[in-house]
Image (cartoon, rainbow, N blue to C red; front, side, top):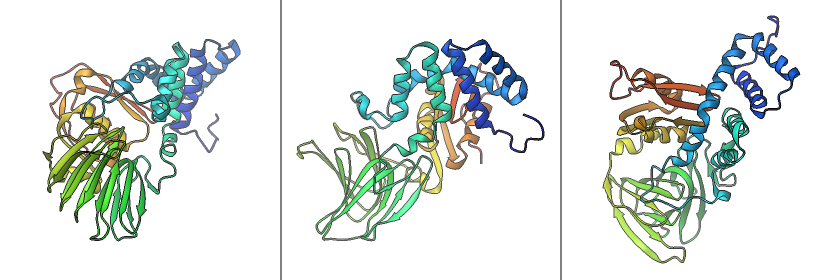
Length: 355
């Protein structure tokens, strides 16, 4: 490309080109002519060579990252849950598993193409017909016809059904805070999986994904119940302000006290987590950030840290992580790989959030 070109390719375009060249190399079918064109492409711009080195390095790390997808447990699970059937598996995870069955370089290439080029596609594949939904990284507030207000967090989908005898919301996935308008004639119920939370004049947060979730009461009082698929009542708990309960499709957990300033920090555009494993922080980041962040070091995964970050500056926080923990941060498109490095005396016990 000559210096007179007015539209230089941006970083993501160059990285996509690097992925295509890498895929041809890994396929084992690269012709002599293609090899010559690849070398010309490398020499044309220093950014091309830099992108090529990044993709080569990522290709070496990606098999570990693919394996890490299924190795990471749900942060909200009370007890182990059965493996999700392939037909109901999230699109990105299903892509990784199918890529793993291809064998060798083609599997890595297919996964790399998805990671670098397809990070935003999954936004449109999750509950596209829901009454209200947000994309990854998006938040919105909706006013219901009864006067109640619902604040939707990132990657959330819900359906609303208002009838003469009941106000029912089905939280299909994600997280939402409900400010319920009083109506003694029509109870307000939020269903997520087999759990139903009924408001008794209140403000509360429900989170649900992968057949597990939790309820946090901010004000007032709620009753959370769990039923089986035949509608039989199997559990019944009333929460007071500052209390929290986890659930899955098998059981309700124990009532626990919670820090309300952390429970709704996302309403203020913050992720706040106190003394939790780094893996839990990465899992939370993946809810807000398109693409995926992989943590490849098991020891670092269990290292406990304090976190307070702006949800709009997650990549800034990730880039600064290497200043306080023995971590190397590698970006490629919408994928980020966190890899352990040798510990030095300058490494600290906790990670500070960029302001």
